Image (tube, rainbow, N blue to C red; front, side):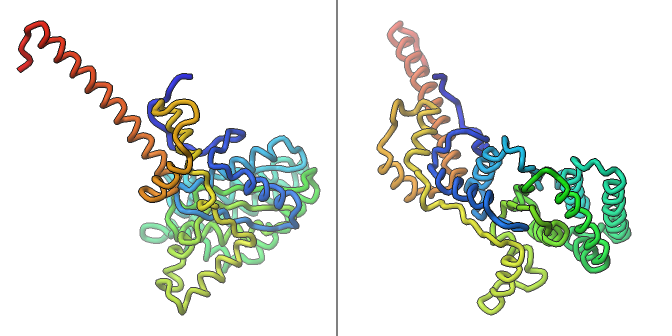
Length: 327
C-alpha cells in the first residue's frame, strides 16, 4: 500500500472507517432520529476539531438511501464567506426554504412561499444597508422576529402544509460549522431556525458547542457568571431538545493514532501498543483528533528530514572515501 506524506485535516467521509470506535454512539443517534417525535433539534457539541462533522457525516450516510427521508445539508461557514453577516444569515434560511419546497408540485403555493420569504428578507437587508457598516446578523434576526411575527407564523404554516403533503416522513436538516462563524451570528441563526422551522416532521442536527452560544449571548446577558448561568442555559435549552456531547473520553485513541502512523509509513502492520500510545498522547497533546493529525504530520516531516540527513551523510562519507574534501 502506498504511504501517505502528511494527513489532511478532513472529517471522516460518509461510509468510511471510524478508527475512533464511536459507532455505537452514531448508531444510537440514528435510532433516536428514526423514531423521535418532531419537531426536534439535536445539538452535537464538542470543541473545535473533536469530530462533529465526521459524526454527522455518518448519520447522513445512514439515511442517504431512505426514500422516506429528505436530507438538507447547510455549511454555515461557506455561506459566511464573501458575505456580510446579515446576508449569510438570510442565505442560509432561504436555502433551507428552497430545499424544503423543491418537491412541491403546487406552483401557486410554491410562489406564495417564495414571495413571502423574499419580502421578509429583502426588508431586513434594506434595513441593514441603511445603517453605517450595516446591521449584524443578530440585529437582523431581532428585527425579523419582532416586526414580522405574523408573517413568519404564516410562512411556518405554509411550510408545514408543504411537508405534510409530501412523501417524506422526516426532513433532516444538518447545519454544520456554526462554531467557525462569529458567535453572535451563530446565535442569530439558532434563533431564526427555531422560530421559522419549528415544523412537524423536521429534525435539525446542529454542530455547535455550548461555549459558542455563551460567547454569542454576552451582548445580551453580560459575561457568564454563577449568577447569570441559568440565562445562558435557558436559551440553549429552548433551542436544543437533545444535547449530545462528543464522547472524547471514550475515543479509541491508540487505534486512531496507529491508523495514522501506519498510513504515513512510520509503523507497519498492527502498529504500536494501543494502550501505551493512548497514555502517551493523553498525557501530552490530549485526545482532540485535529491535534493528533497535526502530530502525525510532524512525524511525517521528521521522517523526510531523517531520510534526507541520511542521504547527505552517505554522500559525505563517499566523498571522504574517494579522497575528496567536503570542507
